[in-house]
Amino acid sequence: MSGKKISIIIIAFVVAVGAFLFFRSAMNKKNQKAQLSVNAIVTGNSSGDEAASHRGDADEQNDDLADQDFDVQCQSGEWMKIADAQKETTTLEGKLRKVYPDDDLPAEFKAFSYYVEGKEKVALSGSDLSKLDNFEDRDIEVQGIKSVDGKSVAVSAARCAGVETDQASIKAKMSFMNWIVDNINAVASAKAPYRKWVVDTVEFVDDNNVYVEYYDAVENEEDFEGDDTSRKILLQVASKSDGGYGVKVLASWEMGEDDYELKSGSDKFASTTDTYYYQYDPVEVKWIRI
Image (cartoon, rainbow, N blue to C red; front, side, top):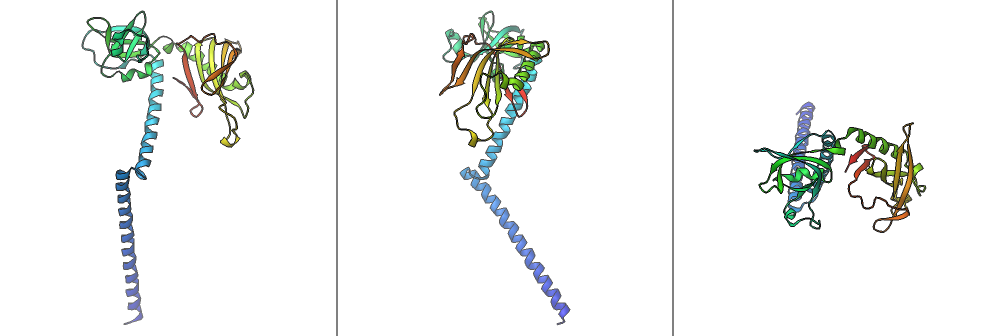
């Protein structure tokens, strides 16, 4: 046999062996992936946990998007359909309230999840009232069919109303909140112990009286030696002709073991229940109505 034929046979043998090894490796990987999938389903480990985590992240992102979409819908006064109305509807105006077990309400309200507090309290009924969750404690208009006894309304549609849709008021609030983000370190009652103060929430009693919560932005956990650095101040606010604001600190708080502890001034709005609450998202760089 010539050397040329021997070389061809050797090359063919090597190729055949390589193909076999590649095929076996591919099959092993396929089997391993299949087994991992089975293990994940049976034990809830590995890929199963990771998939669940991704699903959780996706759900959270969807919730955030839903909240943002609602804010836009609310401010524009757009109606949200809750159910079809087969009869003539009536309209209610007031604050949407959720019924809680400890609420001081007439017994007949305990069977409902929501009511509108306006000139009078009217309970709301319906099969899909979870859509009303974002309206809680907001000014609202509700359309629906009144019950025979007139004590409840089956909701067909709802929308934000009053201050929630007052574009001038919304613009004024946004202007002040953006200003306080930039000026909190000058307004705060004390200097930040570590780095700088960052605004967390702003709560409007009205256009001239505002609670501001803020905290110290620490670069990393190793630098943080103290307890929670959260603070709160009550400000009296007045617009200035140059676009800025004159502010007076009426009261200040520091975080205690369980809650804020008053350190100076007096909380003249302690009994106020209806306020307008916003939280700052430093990642998205915008305010979220909560």
